[in-house]
Structures are given as C-alpha cells and as structure tokens.
Image (spheres, rainbow, N blue to C red):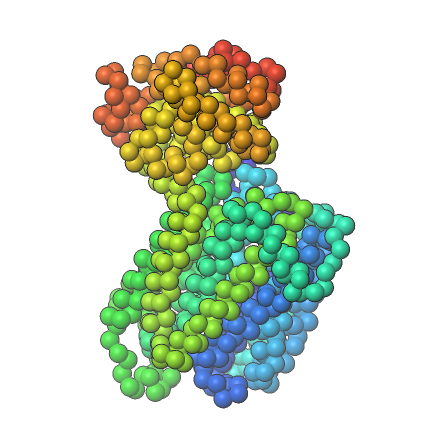
Length: 637
C-alpha cells in the first residue's frame, strides 16, 4: 500500500462498506441539517420568538449537546462490543429519527425538527468512536494516513452533496418539505443495507464493565486522553478546529442573505466550497506526507486558517453595502449562478476554499496521530474523550457567537475576524507548548524543498520498545532526513559541535537530541550522554546514533567507534542499521576543503534511506555494523 494510491482502499471489503456507510450517514446528516436551516431561515419559521441568527447558532449548540452527554458511553460501547453490531444499531436509530423528522417537515413544526436535530447529534455521538476506532483495526500502519484522508474527504464530499441536496429539495415548489421527508428516510435505509457488509471488528476490551454515569465516565475518558501528552494535545488541536469550523459554518446562511444579498442557493454554494476545500486538503495529506503520519502539516494548516480567514474578512469589508431594496425583499436576492458570474465575489470564494483546504491539512494528521499513539485497548474511549472535548469547544463556540451578537451587536464579518485572530493566538500557544508540531513543520519544509526522499525497509524498525538506529554520517541534516522517513520519534546522539550549529541547534534541542563529546575532549559530557541514552532506552524509546563520530570529509565512511557496543551491552537494545545515499556533495555536506554550506546543488535532489534488518544485541559489533551500512550504501554516496 505504501507505493499505491489511497483510493485502492475503496476496492477492498475491509474498508469500502464502512466508507460508504459513514459517507451516507454524513450525507443524510447534512441533507437534514441544511434543509432545516434553509427552511428556518428562508421560510419564516420561528421558535420562542427568537430571531433567525440566534436560532441558527442555537441549532449548532443543540446538535453538539449529545456529544457532551453521551460520548463517554459511546466510547465504552465501541471498545466493549464488536463494532459492526454498534454500527448497525446506530443506522437503525437513524431510520427512526428520520421518520420523526418527516413529521416535522411536513407539518412545519420547528420544535419537532429541533428534537430530531438533538437525536441526530446523538446518532453521530454513538457513531464517532466506532468510525475512528475501526480504522486502525482494518488498515495497515502505512494505510492509516490515506484511510483517514479518505474518510475526512469523503465526509466533506458527503457534506457537500448533502448540503446541496438539502438546500435544493427543501426549496422545491410545491412540496419541498415532503420531498425532504422521503429523501432522508431513503438515505437512512440505504445506509443500513450497506452497513450489513462491513466486516467484523473484534472488541478491543471485551471484559470492560459499562459505566452508565455520564459524569464519572466522561472524567475517566478525559483522564485516559490526558495520560499521553501527545494524544491529549492532538485532541486539543482537533477540538480547536471544531470551535473554528462551528463558528464559521453557522455564519454561512446569514452571510449569504444579509451580507452578499444571495438566496438559499448562495448559502448552499458557500457550504459546498467549504466542503470541497476540506476534502481536497484531506486528500493532499497522503500525497504530501509520503504515506505516514506527518504532523509537520499541522502548522501549515493553521497558518492558512488564519491568513485566509483574515483575507476573507477584508474581502467582505470591501464589498459595498446592500441596497435597501435587497435587504428588505428576499425575492430580489441573487442565485448561485449570478453570484459566481460577479468577479467581485471570486476573492471571497477563493479565501473560503483555501481556509478549508488548510483545515483539512490541519485535521487529518492529528486524527491519525491519536489513532497511532493511543493504546488499542482503550482507543475508542480516547476517541470518545476527543469527541467530548470537541463538543465542549463547539458549544462554547456557539455560545460565544451568541454573546458577541447580543452584547456587542457583532455581525458576520466581525465574527469571521474574531475567529481569524483567535486562531492565530491559539496556534502560537500550541506550538510553543508542543514544539514537536513546529519542529516537524520545519523539517518537512526543509526536506520537501531540498530533496526527493525515498525509503525502503522501514518495516524493519519496530513500532514499540527500545531500539538503536545507526547510520552513516554525511551531512548536517542527516537527522532531519532520517526523521522525515522514520515513523517513530527518535532521540539523536550527535557531536556537541553540530548540536550547537547556529539555526539548526534550536531544531536539535526541540528533537531532544543528545549532545556527546569524545572522552579526551570532555569526559563528563560523554558520560552524561551515555546516561541519557540508557534512560531513553530503558523507558522504551528509540535513539539514533552516528557511530563514525564525525561528518565524512571525503564522502567515504569513517570507522565506527566502539561506543555503540557499550550502549548495547548496557541496555540489551537491538540495533537497526540505516544507509543514507545521495547526500554527499549537497549544500549541507562538507566539500573538498572540509567546509559545508558552500555548494548549492539545487532543489529536489534524489536521496534514499535504506533500512537494514534488525540486529539483536548479542550479534552487535561496531565492525559488523560498519560493514553492513557500507554494503547497503554501495557506491552512491
């Protein structure tokens, strides 16, 4: 799979029925939700005397409330029971809810529709832990980022189709609400039939005792999420994305009507552009990350989410005020075709598309990181905890929007500016708190511009447990090259002089690199380095060592020093040899005069990383490892 397109998964039974089940569920969600919002916004419906803009934001809070109340229970179900049983039960529930919603549409009863909105939120709550918990069971590690990309992009394509269909169907004259009732029931029935084809996914914790107390179980799930700091901060990142997206999505109907002078078609168009953008960004993740979880894409996404949201605000601010005749008469509002033909609107559509592409780049690596690093026995409960935190953020987002509207008379433009500024502040805080994200971004940028990296034998590196990586030392960016391809976080042992290189030194410190000096140069520093190596390996981490002890000055390998034998004998850790090819003669390697950073060889140079078979501790010797790496490297330096 690592060399194939992610779309190949859609031909497999272990993925395709699940994909189409969740696709139809997401589509039906949005046929119903957008149909309800359009029906409410343009049909003059009201509830408890609330204005339309408040009802739209209240609808967002109603849909999210079940995530807060029932996510903990949903996570238990997904870990305790065989997952296809849960999926089919959820699909049966969907059929029942859509039957009730049909009554609400036909009778124009907004109270019934709000009840169904809550129940569809419950439907999504129960499905969420299964949706993301089943992927690591069905997919290989190299397929995880592609599978998540397909699910995320498929979800937003479903949102697109559902959004368009919901807006069109409910607006049909005569009988739009009746057609809505039939369409939502039909989609629920088709989804259930397909769900019967999803292969069994065994429970990951069949002895789990169910806790029906939502408060204590919610606290327990969140505690599970917080037990792994990388998982927890990934959850916070995803939750912030939902905060951002919820506030933005809730503004599309009033944006179309009150700012752009558009009708229901324009509201649907804005949602469609957003959905396409997220789908494109999600699919790009697999291509840009090289079939692995690349968290370096997360800062790239967050930058785009701020930059394009800011530009969207200024683009809207530059629009002339709507004439009084348009604001007072909905019949004069323009349709989607007329809106697109006006070049003044292109910048708005471009900004909306690009900020949603950025959202896709932001979210997919974080979801995949949670699935990869969470313990399998309680993975679904971790995902449930993520859903709980997501829901809390989304409810706060809706409440903040309502407060800004009520207290400060904010309009759509001011809310978009608010979310853009907040995103920049939150992103900066996250990357200061967790520099691993920013480090991977720097690494990804440098490697993407400098080299065309390929790798083979990566499966020889164990996913867990102590292991020592050894490699030939060719350039100042060897650590970045290896990090760009190896899935596991590595602590690099490197010469203290290279560790202190201006510019690169900051990166090495964030990588938790271990500086080392020769015994004659600084024996205390050397012993400190060995102590840190022992500690890391005893804790089950992976370290990477360049046993030559210095960069090659000629392109030929230097002899491997015996220090590698010492750390193996002290820890019993196995060794995986790596050969780097193609770095000699690059800007970051030494030249004939012994100095680097002199010769620029251009962009996108071909570099290969070859990983050899694991060598048990009992068979390790410096000389044998040197010969192994030299043999793998061959004549290509």
